[in-house]
Figure 1: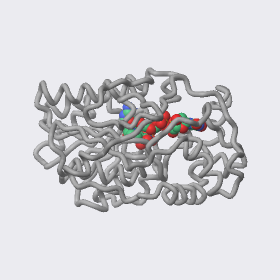
Figure 2 (figure 1 turned 90 degrees about the vertical axis):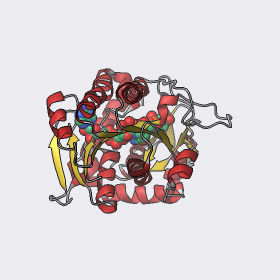
Figure 3 (figure 1 turned 135 degrees about the horizontal axis):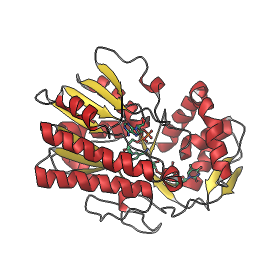
Figure 4 (figure 1 turned 180 degrees about the horizontal axis):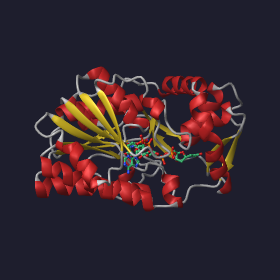
Length: 336
Ligand code: NAD
Ligand code: TDX
């Protein structure tokens, strides 16, 4: 791949992917990002101007998208589509930007890559498969039926269905990936792990939804990026790959680990109002990605990855502090 258009490249995972691509290929990158509240210019600071261009714009803007995708045609180019509204709690407060960006935005990209014959990689989530029981020996695979629970996961499922239909009906050259919960640097403080780390660093209390029995399957964002690049380079067109690093932990266990690593009493947290429709457990079987494409995660110890992430938030309080008060006020208004 010589040229990439990375949508959502100023977000948590998209910016990690841009850094990863620059370090692991010779591709030139255009970032297309609307710079919503979730984006971060700081995450892209210091990148080489001769290889990276940043365009501020909306993936629903068909004219803008068409022009950027046209530049990739015949240039060994591809679109890597990260842009999304990504937070479940926000989707419960107001689903409309989720339908617009995640579904209409993906449709807009699909029509552009169809017109110009350009390869697309669509980044999605394990949440499209709904949830598992705690004692279910099964994990999600590429053939698990779709059963999304929240407006966020339903909008991502809708986008996935569009991509699959455009592959089958129009021969669009696309791959898809569905990844588990990411953690690492530059994740917005609205999300679980950064929220709890920064609550402690800020002198506040950790906030656990419900009983904390819910299980998430954690992967470091760097491992998500390496998997997406691998699929882009070697994935089979039309195929879906599940990305996961065998990181299942209950929310309660994660909260206790954060408190312990920060030198606090592991039981010093508040139980707060549970999320409506809260999915119980996600778990990924990434055998296909590992055996077919030879991918392996580098962060094999969640404890160590979490410790490094805590250090990162400690060192970057100038980045997260300006966002923190408004996020906590919005959660407090909901009893969370
Ligand atoms: P994020 O919210 O941190 O970043 C999203 C980025 O998309 C932001 O920079 C934002 O400005 C941009 N964006 C939003 N609407 C846009 C629009 N209309 N046009 C252009 N840009 C727009 O999200 P993230 O956590 O980095 O997630 C990235 C992708 O990975 C999403 O597609 C998400 O569904 C998927 N994913 C995330 C996780 C996770 O744990 N965070 C797990 C699996 C899959
Ligand atoms: O304060 C909190 N307390 C709490 O107990 C918050 C913000 C969350 N939680 C719980 C809810 C979830 O069980 O922690 C878990 C993780 O919550 P989030 O960080 O909001 O992630 P989740 O809803 O699991 O979705 C994430 O992973 C899949 C990403 O936000 C999605 O974009 C991705 O698709």
